[in-house]
Each structure stands twice: as structure tokens, then as C-alpha cells.
Image (tube, rainbow, N blue to C red):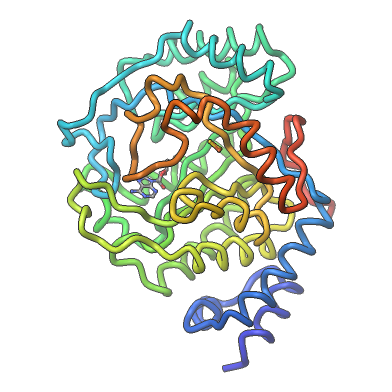
Length: 351
Ligand code: 5AD
Ligand code: FES
């Protein structure tokens, strides 16, 4: 096998590797390898985005979910969660505050909550678009029918985040109950693309049972899907799930994967996620310094933030966190990056 630096050179030129090469790249890398990769990833990110970091206002509008994913703190079976739903008025209030703070993308994220009908969602989206025509709307509300996705798109939704979680069928089945399937997940992603959304996918790093082979398959799946956005973060246990006692994922491996993804899809929008900020106090800064170019401060009302706990110790849930935007602006500035207000749409490559 060639050494890792040679593989990194190949990745930079070819923008992909074979499954075996990815496995090798991901196994037993040194800090020197990671540094070599990070430098190339940052150089690439700077070519496309300079030192700019896009920002999206995250509105966690419901923690009700019909699913029971084994890793997720708001899974249906967790009876210890205080469930909440934001009304349309609550959501618009978040947007008003966010707009004033400079956000030009709003992300509506929630569990799969059947209480919001397609008409309800369309009504919320239409009103947001009417009030803030210069803003992008991103949805992150899980698996829906083609028809539902089309309804939201026609109402004005621009983007959709749906992490595939793992591209390996056996692994997928270890993380989810039988009611969920990788095939349907992939079909949803294809449908979203076909409808015309800017699509985001991604996975957790270090989820239970995950191997380097699985990660290689995740990378190849992402290459093939060619998404506009790629969100990854370390797996973090939640005390009220079947995976409560599992090890958390590795920050270093997450950062390494961010750099790999940056070289694979240079123009992608890659967030430094909240999970990365939770695993280490400077995780999001490190994410950007590894090739990420998006941050997603929490815009949810402070009163509900603690209730949207996908994993333990999630940051930005205290009263003091009312102002994540300013906090992140300062954090990014400290490491030489500038948060900008632009919508930050995906720009396809010319070739
Ligand atoms: N640790 C880290 N990330 C998680 N997610 C869900 N549960 C956890 C957890 N315990 C991620 C999933 C999901 C996204 C919204 O949050 O990847 O797609
Ligand atoms: Fe939320 Fe810093 S980003 S408190």
C-alpha cells in the first residue's frame, strides 16, 4: 500500500479514491498525516470560499418523532422527554429575531412529527418566504413521500437536509428499527434531488458498530450522490437510549473526514456541527480549520432548547446561549475566519 501522503495527493487530484484506498487512508493515520491532509483541505476551502464562513439559523421546531432510532435522544420510546411543538407564530418570531441578527438562511429542523400536515408545513414555508423573500429555507424533517417533498418545494423550500447515517445496509439495520430502511432513505435523497432541492446528507462518526469499511462506503456514497451540503459530527451517547453505554466518536477522525470531504467535493457546504462543538470546546473552530465552511447557530427559543437533546451535554442550551450568533462570530474571528450573512447557495462546478 502507498503511504498516506501519496493517497492524499491522489485524492486531491482525482477527488476520490477506491474503497480499499479509503479504508487504508482511514486506518492508523498519524497526526502528521492529518496535518498534511488538513493543509490541503484548508487551501481548497480558501480557493472556493476565501476565509468566509456561512451561517444558518437553526430552528428546532418540534421534538416529537414517530421514529425510534437507537442512537437518538428524542426517539419515540424515550418517555423522559418533555415534548414540545412551536406554532407558526413561534417560528415566525424566531425568523424575525434571526433576520435582525443577519441570518439569510433558516433551517427548520424537527423529528418526524405527523401533527404538522403537509398543508401546515406549506403554510409555514409560504409565510416565511412572503415575510423574508431574500432568505433561503432549509428543511430537515426526515423521510416523506415524493408528493410531500414536492409540496414543500412548491411552497418555497430551497434546501433539504437528510443524513443517510450510514451507507452500509447491515450497519443501518443495527442503528435503526426494522420500520426504517437504507433503501428508503436513499430513495428520499434521490427524490429530493430530482425535485430540485439543494440536498444535504451526512453521517455520524463513531456510531456503534461502525468500521473503516463503513466509512469508506459513506464516502463513496456521498461522492456518487454529489450533495450540495455534507453534515458530519461525532456520535455522542444519550443516557435514555439503547446506546447509552456506547463510546462516543472521535473528534480527530471527524476532523480528518471533514478534510477528506473537502477534497472530494471542493465547493460543498460543510458545517462545523453542534456535535463537534459538544465533544470539544473548540470543536467548531477546529472544524473550520479542517475545511468546514458553515456554522449553524441555534435560533430556537431558549425555553425549548434543553428539550431538543439528541445526545447528552449538547451545547447552546442554557439561558446564557441566547446569542449564539455573536458567540460564533467572535469564535470564528479568533481563528481568522469571517461569518457572512449571504444566503450561501451551492454553486455548481464549471467542469
Ligand atoms: N450523536 C450524534 N449525532 C446524532 N444525531 C442524532 N442522534 C445523535 C447522537 N446521539 C444526528 C443524526 C441526525 C442529526 C439531526 O443528528 O445524524 O441526522
Ligand atoms: Fe451557542 Fe456559543 S454558539 S453559545
